[in-house]
Length: 326
Image 1 (cartoon, rainbow, N blue to C red):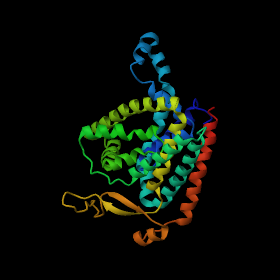
Image 2: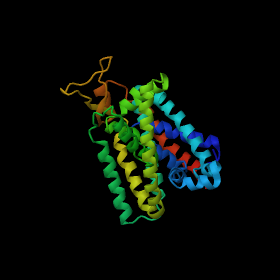
Image 3: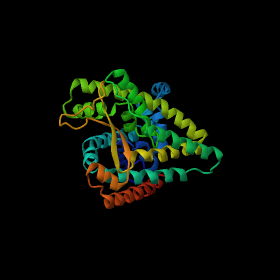
Image 4: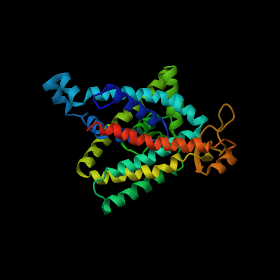
């Protein structure tokens, strides 16, 4: 894990990014940034485009492979795929069983990540401060928007992929949370991805292929925009990304109680097979005592504080890992 040419290091980074992408409120882009591969990932994605045609004509497949940093990309994607599978089956279970503990870990991770990214700004000026505040306001606003009901249309699935993939290269913006806002999280992750991985149902595989295509288009577009802003306005870009992360903390507070659920056209709460609400749309942040009173569940205060600290520390451990890249 000492550098980005080390396959094991790349795989582990990819796994961490993949697990982050499954969790609403946590960004894979954050993991990429604090482990030192963010700009390398941007430039790798940016390499895909029409320029590869003359490269192929001149140098063949080996030239294209070198231009897209193929070994790095394939290894990272392999790690991400493994991380997504782990996230779907393991992290989702932990979130359902011990939510305060898992959210506390990520809360600490995001706080430290915001500090880390802010430290990369070489000079704070009026522009950086304004964009920091603007980024925080935008991210906070996103967290309080009432989610839509979603759609199973392949066109909507494609658009959802193009928008949600922004989390891969935008620290502080969670792709899973974007899917949640669009009303597509349950349909994509629970109703489609899990069956596609376990039963290989054709309709589910088609849906995931369309979603993946949307992700590809979104990646190619946004990577070029971000690569340009990093090259020309690095400090301003880092400032707004730091703001995004600060604003996103509202979504991952460890103790939350449901305040709104998915409803049908008549306004009735849609229930799952076991009689429980099918999907929570909105939650209110509360203190541990209020959480216990409202849910009759253990708030795990000591464990949550411990995991919050662990999440905070883990960022600076990953920072040391990233520092070895240079």
